[in-house]
Length: 82
Length: 465
Image (cartoon, rainbow over all chains, first blue to last red; front, side):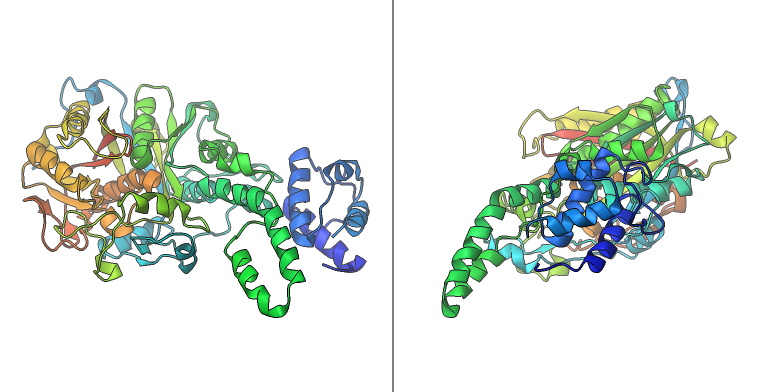
């Protein structure tokens, strides 16, 4: 996968989060993963798995654990090496 | 004619009585109880060539199997993301359990939306156990994880070499890469998907059941052992109710599980057309039909409690016998001594005489060695009159799920008063009353039996209430 478009990545990350966290609607970009969305450690594992498969990029679990919001997660995917 | 009711002095007369109040099925003949039973009575069977890709890896003697039709459906018990965290063995068990609980009139009350967990408000969670059989657990997940681990880096290197070659030389490496299927990402839930107790654990988690949660890995007898042990647990008061059965999923991208059975000559093969090659109890049988998988879950409850909540009752479990050949890990003891003892123990446990039994759901694999031993024992105990059929003549062999699917078929036989035929039986090997077509059978008692690689023999006796 070459250059990623931020809008498209945001939509896909939101869809993945909705699936992993069993949400009715995609979360807002400003939503906080733990405080607002209730993500737990098992969800983070799922999230990394789904993101790596969706984007073909290796996402660091240490960085994911430090991420606060959906927007931060989009930044991490865009920053990850193909 | 057979008689209902336990004999004086039998364990059944002394103890609590155990009934089947719900039943759910995933199978190649249908992924719900009604379509399964309709297809069984019609003598249907799904037999197709094995996936073409499997021939890349081995020269296979058997070339057919019984694949599942699309069986996944939306269920509140499995959230969208969980489909990726649960092996098919667990997903099938959950679907069958959902159907069984609904049939038993046991409502699911949501507990945690994100985790898609529930409770059964009509049952005390501490008094309800899970008893599940599986032969190989999440072996498909294990193989996929292993393939990623072994092949991911190597495939990347091969791809680099390929890209450096001129066009005309790339095809060979493209073919090598295509023959090495592996998931692009390692599934971090590989252990939780592979472990044999995962399906039972997921049932307990999803339904909030805090009683004993046991897994029985007894190869082809797993499902029967699970139901038998659940029956005993409810009868002796260890549990008020149990979710019991078997689940198995045997497909993998490489045909590795299939090859394991094919290599020892256990599978149906030969020149007959695919739909004729699976022939339990026929002189021209050649082995068992490998099935992709399946699951059956029964809800067992104590009779008085089931009646108190006006639960539908499909059948009563009245006896169980379990022995081990201690002879050979793959070959059945040709004397049939321990099979006979399991049957006799089961009948004694139920307080039944052989003449009380009106139907035998046989193990009936269709292997050259096993069928004559089973027939000899059935003839010795029941004589030539008792009706017999093999559910494996329809479904093929689902290993750890087979005993549960056959217990389901036996319960449905008693409930509906009709038994399914033994398919492809033209020239029987024994003088037994094999059913060649769906037959009205308004009998009171039936037995179903399973014999495992490993030598475990398990027999259940069921009764119509």
